[in-house]
Image (cartoon, rainbow, N blue to C red):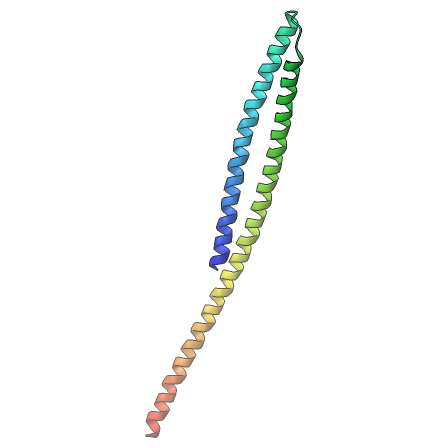
Length: 132
């Protein structure tokens, strides 16, 4: 029972960590998208003013675009992993409920058996006293 709870706690901690990671990556993605937009705006202004753009700026924009794509992939993967963990946690919770119900049934059977044994013991003591 404690093993199941420990496993459930571990799964919940993994889920929380995945959610935090996902939130962190989402905020990083927003920041990178803003940086990308700012860089593109600067690039457009320089082109409009007649300045030739260097390959360095183009590479920087491409790098930022790749980082945004990478962050989006990571976020999708994190969300998928979170959903898998949530599904596994629901399964474990269901199993724990079933195990708990079964343990309660066994406890009730044990109590009834102990009560019957006690009643039989009292009846045997009465018979023994009557035979004396």
